[in-house]
Length: 458
Image (cartoon, rainbow, N blue to C red):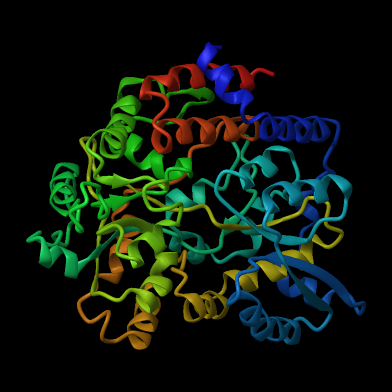
């Protein structure tokens, strides 16, 4: 390990120590044994197989709009399944750590939402039920075919365990401020999207010192670099990977293609300054920076649509994500539902899972917060819901840009290591040092890669 890496990590000792202690706790735990394939029943059979009332705990988002939607929808499920009563509990802010601790203690929700780089960690610890027997025997194949293959296939472990099913399809696209584009004479992106060279040229024109004080106060664009999956898109569109697709213990961040993608981002943030860092915009989030007029464009997801349409005091445009040297990619988030391995009621939890995947619940999420359906067949209804609520703002808005990767097959999902729990804090620390603080060059990732690979053998 380099002196630089050790020095930087010591300043964050508390975070690393917490991760180590959690790993030691989990190493001592053994998850309950999965139910055998022949023991599964369908959701309908679960509803009718007992006169006793089964109580399930369902944990999901705590955002303000979500609990009222659940309160509206759960009575529908309870009426259809009179012997299953569902109690919804909102997830905590530290759900990625707390949920795992609850599972280890034997006191976890029966069914829960999980996401991104932390849900695979829980699955790798053996704490999520293998859904394959249920999917193969009791899920309409048309629903499976309706999912984005990249998103659906990401919810398997290397040993074939299917630990989750998609909650919604959180795809990324490029939001842009049409008023600022017009003011600075920048052409809107074409329907098929820009190349990275065209994107960079637009950022150059839009980065401005608007008050003449010698300091930039309008940046061309912004990305959330704290999340490694957002950075991964630039690695992928340069032909590289974070994780070797053939070997989940092999870090590829030090390979030329990955380095090129990282360098492109670094140059925009730390060399020419056309992409804002969190420090540049006062540590507000990407959506707030865009709505506030601090950045002319923002790389964000379909989940941001409602907030931006409701609060942006300017005309909003949308375009597919820019294409890199290796082609166009966009992130499909792995927001998903899983069932705890330790649940006493797996069949009833599966019945609830089927309800959450159904049209009624999926479109309820779309109406409440414009969540993009994970199923392609429901995308037209989703777009109609958005246009009905904001007819003027969406008159010429390409909402379907978010579904472009799903429909054309260029979606990518977060790449995870075999030992993701130990890797995640290392990656996030490195991204902060390189992109936000500018304290390390892109080549620093070689040191990080060495430590990531060492963690895979521990």
